[in-house]
Picture: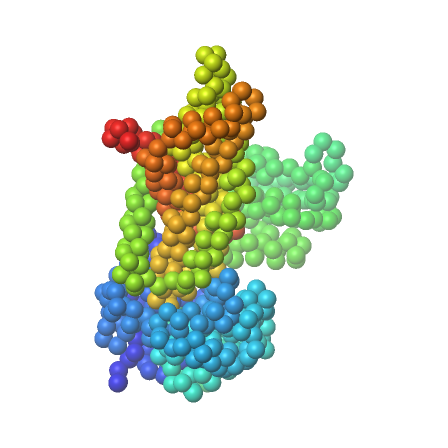
Length: 260
Length: 380
């Protein structure tokens, strides 16, 4: 199959009358690591909620291949959701279930695998994220970084085509954050999945992203898209300021070519 | 501050027609008697001529946040009146902080206006809220029924273990409290009735009063109220916390309907367990009534049991059990609804639990009245 895997078409997001972002248009290509970036309050996480079907758009559409997420109902919609896995910011593991039960949740409900097979898959997924042997721990008994990795294992339980990750580095120390980035990159390369990451962590953006949108809270729309390097070269002052922590030379100089 | 521990003062000097100097003197710290900005502005007078105010600090001693709030008051007022404020003679720290304060202008519309409305408007709004709330409840009830339909078609997705855990939580674990309350309610019914009936020497009819009272009404009602406080609140808190942790979002994204996965096992558990608890409460009530009658009112145990057997019929028992089953559904729905509606903070979880109990007690009493009325009309 060719063509973009996700298409966002004139999407407007709002809470009641309060518009968060309007007229978003972008596409996510197969095997991309796509970054949704923007300052605090720009609606990054809200956009993620629209992409994974948790919040209905005020206007516009989200297409998976050519199929609209918000027009689909019942089994059709379920088929689309089956293609995606989500790692929430806090991990969002079911706190009343062990890690094994958490990962078994989608497997048990949506597949005909035998309990033995499910157990094997659980150990395999936990081993992938470096948590081998933690099957019978409850989320509250492990650290925040481990919870995120367990969340990643659950998100990947059904071998999703598209993995959504909300703020992977939030609340993690730089080393753990880097490890999680490496893990995501590694999994993308091995599984060929598409990854969509919401982040404002510059290190992550440049290390793993190869396509991105930048959401601006003031104009309430996206002001740039492309790879992080392209965004940096785009010369848009807000984007450049964001990507250089505000230390960039004025972009005018950039255009004149006196600075690379 | 009746007894200032630090000395502070200001003087307003006239530099020219259009310019004043505000000299700050002494320690402007917590504990000093700091004047309100209005005093200074009052001294400047209403004259339009002044268009520049220089703030100087030659004799300023120590200072803290109170100096800053004073200066911000002055600067804000002066800006409104179009007076330029020159702060260049202030200490470097003060200037730095002022720059920070005014670096990001207040976002238009960000400030929340405290809205005070008249009592009539408040009554109206409360009524509208109650109406909306009722509609949401009905919608939720409808969705729950769809989930029940899915269950009967064998397509509902939930973990069986959740159902059994909920049954255990709401059934056997609640036996102790149901025993105590029902026994005491039976006891109270017997006492209240006995005092009157003994006047006519009709103590034997205490058995009728207790039997019918417990079976038709009190057994179901007390069980309902106990379970709404015990289990309804627990449901709301569980689901509310899951909402706070995005666990419910995670379920939705996995394609698991929270209605089937979370609400259905809870509702089923209560629907199955409530009739049994009601039966047990009825029995305990009769035992309680018997204790009083036999010990204080000169009726033998055999007489009491025999009279009870004559007085109560299967219909009475079925009315009570049906009521209690309906209460169970209402408690589960109210608890789960409040949990899923829960906001994303710690206090929201508390509010959800409170609201679940209040809502379910209200619905229980309303449903009870309606069903009692229906039974009366039908002559059951």
